Length: 206
Image (tube, rainbow, N blue to C red; front, side, top):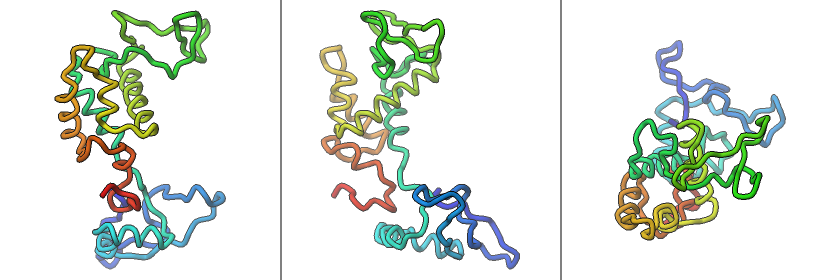
């Protein structure tokens, strides 16, 4: 949802009073306490303005605050990959990651968790990382997905590295499944093309 709108005002109209456009809709480029003027619009006017991409672009160029411009691509891709991996609910590594290279190296061949004393080293079993909790494993999978997006990888490149044929995977079927579940319409297009909200994407794939 782009704007958190009140249900009714005193007149019974759906409206958005000035300064009430969504909680914590601050502009990070302005100093604390300094806010842009907020438009006083009825719900129908807001819906009309964001109904099409063209209207969304015009809204963005108007300088009015936007609640968000990023969709849930990372979450959708991570969920689709975990679904394809099919690990049980008790498995702390649902993405089936072999390593967690974002943690710093310690002794030769080992990594350790920062801010632990004495230092705790990462655990592995049968060549795969064993996170301390399932939440950590899910966060790790999302982290890897985000890094691939930032590196400009396509879905085909991401999955070919995540689940290569050499590991006994049907990589092509994996790619097609994840593409369908995550709404990726072109598996050969850099994934960052899909990360902007459709209403405000100024640089969408064509």
